[in-house]
Length: 393
Image (cartoon, rainbow, N blue to C red; front, side, top):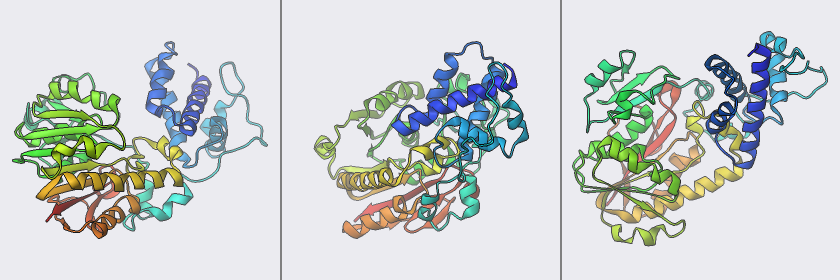
């Protein structure tokens, strides 16, 4: 493909991503995968170039553009290399009319900036759109870090944890034998630190209330050394179904899965009420801490959606708290840097639930934020997370 044709393909790809963000459709990664599958003529270099152009625009504009062309036209005003590609050639984009619309605004939506934790200053906000590395968790049920590091000589050992490795962003590893045989899982350092805060080793009954596809569930199983009972629940069948084959591959034998019906969670967990040593709530959230991996999610977020997730978080904390035994712990986590989802949520819970206290997480990284810990890309080289460890008295 000629450079101009690559730009035209990027425009077409971003238009699909804009529509999906507007209508609650598939993620940008899923759309890109389908987009390239339908264009077999595009070689690997073409696909990489188109994706780089597309993601460059997605990172540049925090407000969802009206069209991809308006976004690229704005980029062309300050980037001569992009401007030269609007050449009107076959398979390339038409020449830009000086009067045509341009997208405006910065990399972050204006309305959200005042909502960040006070820890997240301008430099921290800018880092939310940096390119992310690829972190790995060595599966202690199957391997030691040293032997996996020997298989991946380009991997950096992360000293904060005993099982963490880091590869350059974009490294192709899905088909690596260490992944296929369950020796490692792709998992951000921040997610691994949340599991560290769970202190799950030696516990009898652990509930992962929002397990999703089970990344943290598998890390908990490894921390528990397959002892005890580990129940993974979610209301999304498609995501939860992914856990079973992953657990088999990882050698995690103490995992039970339980699909919950929305608004009936307490009834469906009644056998666990007051019986869990630990409940992990990795709650649905704005995703603001993962924008460097999923920048198009900025285009899906508005004040109404943020209120819905904040309300859902409070509901999940109420459900989870009833499952915790006296003396047991609840670990609440969100991949968000917005205050209402983090320290504000925990403060509201402690105010409305007697007989609970915040305790130390046991994690050495991050910074204190209210009764919890905040991780940020700039300060901690992880995705952005808030987490807190609460004890039932």
